[in-house]
Length: 452
Image 1 (tube, rainbow, N blue to C red):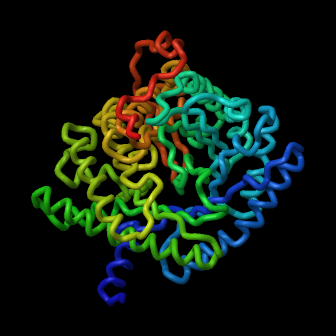
Image 2: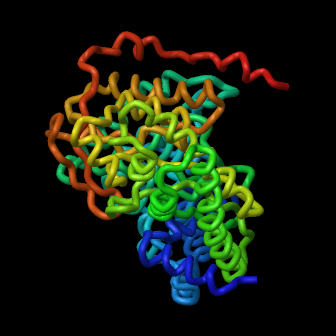
Image 3: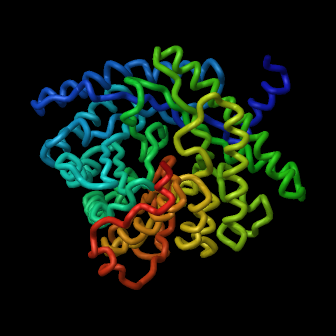
């Protein structure tokens, strides 16, 4: 039973510490839309999405008003479109993206994810054509997000797909060059992609999911940072315990909204994603949490250890608060979306090499990092390969969302707006990886993948 102190504490977290529900995401299966007639396929997809999600935004707004908890995004995730579109031409896949954009506008949702392909072991015709279509699809739509899974611990790394994704990023950056290459902000490359992730740009509705499901992603870096400040100079055991208790409270709010939304929408409650999702707002930063532990600046020595402890404590506290936990669940470290990360990158404390090390112990990977627009596609692919290898070897989800900003160089600033924030263009190695990427083929799965 709720008591007065619990209610007052939650109100304080919302008003003073930026607690919110980052997203209520409805997952929708499109398998029953498959048709060998492209026009029929487009119509069935539009009808399925708009019919199933017609009450998503009104219900989320009703819950915001009822509980006084901000719900920042209302989103939809779909069956990976390459599995539904089959052998459509690249132009056919672009038309599907336009259909999804029209549905997003009709429903008033913030994003639709699932313009995606799974190619960890090889490419079907449909997957190849969808990947070819990604740059134009992202350039001609505003609400569509794309993801490609190029590796898994079981399959290894599809280096042909990794090489292709470097080219796709370059093309997407060029086609959206008038808007700081923002198309790349809606594209992520994965290893071990989860099937129930509510966060963009990587949200998909996996093949093992029900016909429709409600997944919720919470936020709360500001709440955790405040709790750490209140503890003062305690030891790490006490600090971890404080973070666990705080993560429990944050996750309970997510559980409340997930259950209520599922009931009102007549859909199963799927998961709560425990990830601490930062924003560009001052105070709502994972970097500030790490600095609150005693680091002068995020990126200095000790940052990886601090992040590892934070990520573990968040999971331990959150998993006790929800009957179903999934998605990514941990701590996000996107550069442009985190005020503390932005500041650390601007002053030189945080490099891409340090970010890569940090991704070995937290959720996802190299996220929302602006790099020079003249970066070769092979270098982008090599960065993808490095990060994906961390995921494959460590049997965890990792991902890359790089933005080669057309016409801009190291030190210049890029403004994306909204939750995407802004970021300095970061320095990359000047040495080539072209011959490495040109080898192609597959990097075999690690020996510990043989667990059966």
